Length: 59
Image (cartoon, rainbow, N blue to C red; front, side, top):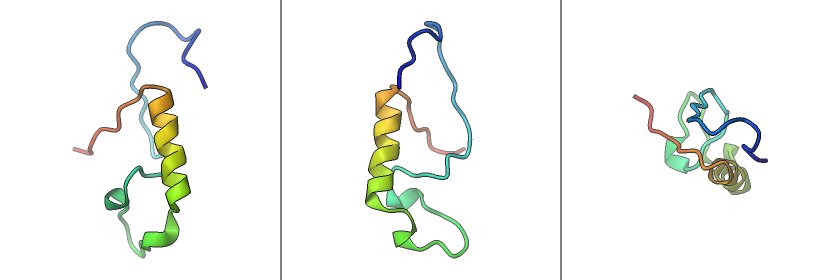
């Protein structure tokens, strides 16, 4: 995936991605530690890193 062709300005990407980078971020009713696999977390992390995005803590 590439940002090329979408302009040189700053981006703000927001939403509920239904993915987390770290186990500590996983919250909710009935949360089971194994519900999100380590490979899913790595894939989401690669997505963010590949697009040079920052994962900000919720306010």
